[in-house]
Amino acid sequence: MPLTRRYILPLILCCLALPIRAQQPAEEDEANIRFAQEIHAQLDKMNTELHQITEEETRQGQITPSGIRSAYFIRNMNSKVQSTDRRLKAFNVRWEAFNAANQAFISDHEDLMDKMTAMQLRLQAANDTLAMQQQRCAAIKDFVAAEEYILAQDSVYEARYKQAFAMSFVQKLTPQLEKLKATNQAQFEALQEQYDKTKAAYELVPQLQDRADIVNECYYTIKAKSDKIQEMKYMPLLERVKEYLTSLAYVAVILILINMLTAKYKAAKQTKEALEKQAKLIKKENQYPTI
Image 1: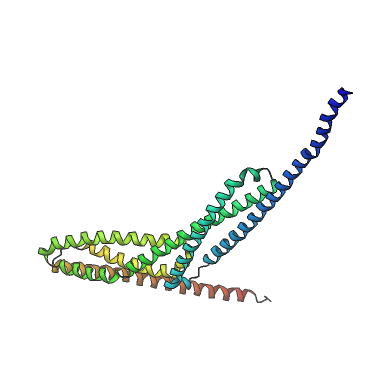
Image 2: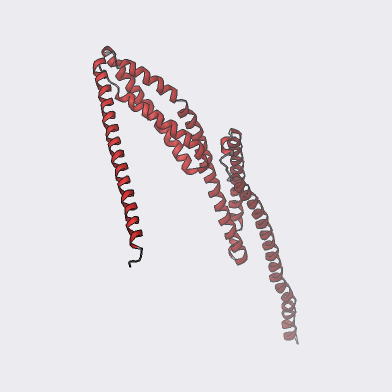
């Protein structure tokens, strides 16, 4: 009997402990389910915010040729891109913190992993889009500055060309002329750098085409004047007149050749037309029946 009592008490205690041990896994499962639901809710909230950011980026990427002519449009575009940059940076910080805090739990749940992966891809796309828009804003800014500089240089090179042309008549001014040519070369290299910026900006922002065409025309006009300045040298008046007359003679010879070729072309054309008419007449005569 005492032996029986000795085993009954532990048996009773074991029976009482079984419901407690069975209850702990159930509570843990419920806690995990609630936490997973919280993670899903946070991801959905962050996904909504990211969607708003990407929509804002899409609107900012809509550039029209007419709009890009406006200084207000360019300033407004820069302001909006800067605002999106601040917003996306804050989102990236929260996203990294959220990912670090919940990575272990999320890795054990396939549905959460799928949602996290999709979010990460969208976030990367948003960051790439923002980087591209920042490059376009920088390119437009460089273009506007270069455009203003180049268009203002046409009159400068025109005045410099007249000055160099006047110097080329006086032998004593040869040192000053060479100095002017050195200055011209250095300044044209600076202008070339600005022009290269406009080309790079146009490649990145095709909507700049209308403005780029005007810059191109002005650049080639300036380049022609710069080349003439670099070719300037002292030349006596008689030699200059001789060179001018020689150039006129060359032009006259070219015009004579052009007239000769034109006359030969017209004669050949008339001969061909006469032969074609004669061939048609012969063909028409051959069509009559013979008796």
